[in-house]
Image (tube, rainbow, N blue to C red; front, side):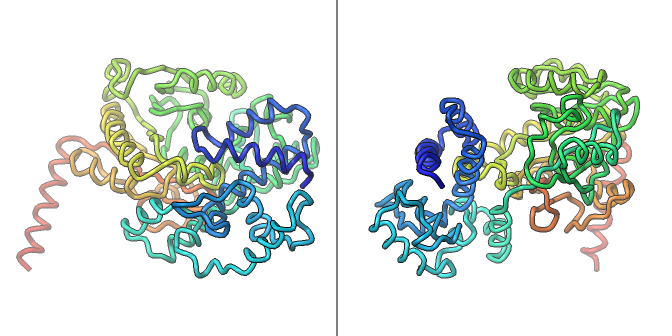
Length: 445
């Protein structure tokens, strides 16, 4: 690392560690304001900053941070070079003093196996406490934490109305000697070797591909959308899943893209133009109870709810999230998740499908929300994600009827999804009576 790169890294860390803004925004702002940093400089700086954020609890422990004493960014960087990059004293950048190098020698002797669980898992204490309270074992917490320390691969989704996966793979190989391989589960996905700037290639510019994690692509498969249907993406955001749904519908039917953020919907417009889709109807709403939603009650074949969440499943990409969220913020999100799911369910017609999804592995945002919803909505039943994916010729190991992906097991972000189907009032009543009879029989035995 050159002195210029080191100086920029320290400047960015001093801002990012305040956790007042997303780390990627802090990095982007610094690069815009310092145009003398070349491509190689930026790559080294960004990699160092994000790797340090992933390992931050470990680095703080190694550097001697306590409630009474916070380690400086320089000490954290020294710990990073010493313990994460495994540089010996002679290999440390020249900006470190003899005193720093002596400190580095002491850091090398510290055994992480003796550290608390949250340090070994590189997670804040609030997150470890939440996972343990939900019944996770220490081994499971550690496995998830270590999996989140890896850099996420670059996955792209081929736009099925414009191209075939094999053709795009060949195009990228010919255009930039970019190697790809089909994703193991998604029929549209390609996993790209390295981190090339895909947005500069013709296949991206002309809408044949979009950057999208394979886990996110699987949510589309669970929706089961078909040609000519009425579909709603209830929390569309910038529209990654909207574009997938539209392509699955083969540009037919009607697809509503709702969101409360005008900025996010504005970001959808250029992506929509590239995609070639004409069946998408973006709609800005004031809240989950907006009048626009009420007018569509009971009319949708499919409603996808990619709910606002803590984002804990994306820590490989957004490592600062674990420090910017808290137990209190997750509790606030739970209230929002309940309200959104309840409101979105009103759009689903009899026999229609409701998919609730998050990019989190916390049960309080996932299974707990779904179970509570089902308890108060007997006209919905849970479908088995394993069976639905098997029908789409996707063989994937899942623990139960929910989709819960993990980077360690599936090499995706930690997405969650539950697929619910609305049943008629008569069928719901019959199911309820059957459940009561079964309970009485068990009690009699």
